Length: 277
Image 1 (tube, rainbow, N blue to C red):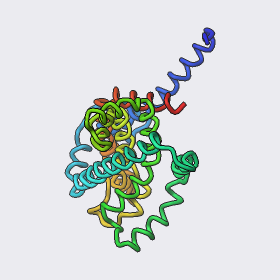
Image 2 (cartoon, rainbow, N blue to C red):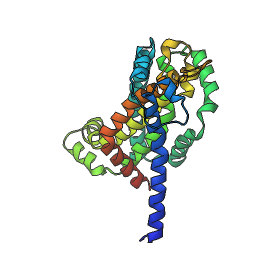
Image 3 (tube, rainbow, N blue to C red):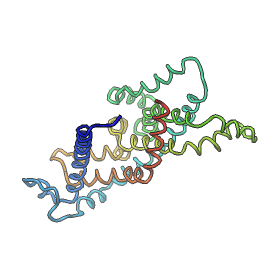
Image 4 (tube, rainbow, N blue to C red):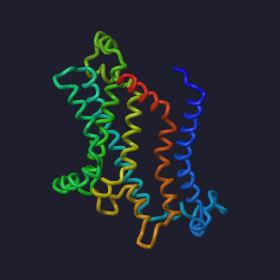
């Protein structure tokens, strides 16, 4: 359907507005991270710093536990991505290739589980972790992060599996492969865009999660980056310069990964969406 000129202008105006609302806070944070404290609190505020300084970044990186927070987030994120992808690959394959009674209902329940907010699960997760002796450990963080994102990635995987012809597996089996070998040598390489898309989703979820990390960790040595950012808000006020610098440092890894892999991310999300529709 061809759009009228007025509709095109409206759509473009809305896109420009969305870009502005998205970029302005990000650019303001970058600018604040290079400002002196006196300039941050000055009125009227200025977008660009008069004299850019790296003091805020040095202050953040020189803190005793900040690098430990980054290490914690890295360990939890990598482990969560590995668990999420491994479970979702097999669950998605089973949902796409096999028919069983109640399959549609099961898939609906899996996806509907994501509708339960993290606030509602924070206390039950805390009591469960405490009862199992897993409170303040990497294990509980990896477990809950994976559990929350596996339904979405499973749905994405099973949609992408449907775009791969079954004849490829059948041809591999005729060449001497069993089901396991055909899966790893034929199907998994073709799933690369979907695997990368699922990995980025899982990594973003684990890296940025705050509520559960705050409730399930209690020692400073186990805190993750989102919780570390919260610590810049003290009883004496907010250290805006250091908080802005820490925020930029914390989002850089995810931004870099996405920029490198965005082509595969778009392919994985688009193919899964078209198949599901």
